[in-house]
Image (cartoon, rainbow, N blue to C red; front, side):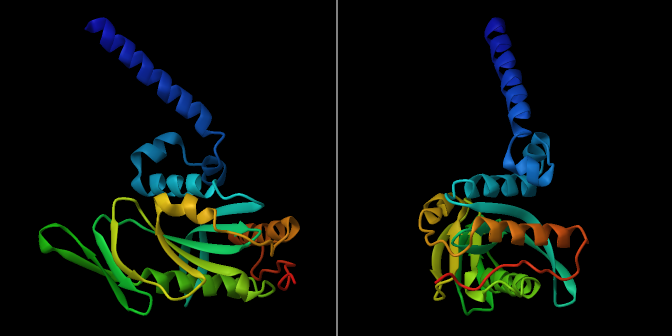
Amino acid sequence: MTLFLLVVLIAIIGYFIFKLYTHDNTTFYQLTGYSYFDVLMNKSVRISYQLVKELEHVQGIKKVMVNLQLPVHNEVQTIDALLLHESGIYVVNVKDKSGWINGREQGIEWIELLHKNKKQVFNNPIHETKRLTHALKDQLPEVDGTFFGTLVVFTNGCSFQQIEVQSSNVEVLKMAELKKWAKTLEGKRLSETEIENVYTALEAFMHGKNTTLHSKTATPTK
């Protein structure tokens, strides 16, 4: 028994050493600088890590940004993730919920149903994400507005009971559905150069180098 526990302990230590080594090469670490221990110990960091991992399944030319801060109505708000893809620019807003989710795109509030008939009301995440999308559009005036998509992603611990979405450029899904969603992306409206230009402009803005963004990005591809 003692030998068995020793073997298990060695295996666990070896696993963590391997994860620590490989984590430094991940996209998430390169984007955020968060260590593997940060991922283990901090739930919000762990959710962001899972999101980036899922977005890596997106095929085609792309860039991913996380925790992008933008001015919205005289205050700073955060875009959880931004996917710059050849098919468009997708603003991602993450919601950590565990109950049954009910909501309509036009509604002011959504409802999370919990155990023992308890419920929690929260602001419509589509409206929140659209505001972030509009704020990003304002910062990228040279990018055609039809390129932008709004994506609300819920953590996997919840379930959708009744969700109503009408807009074609809005998606509401769970983290585990991102891989399937990625396969639906089609069209090449942004070139690699245009994606790089937007990415560079946003990076400069984030680091305070530019107060106004000029992306050199285009009108829709015919």
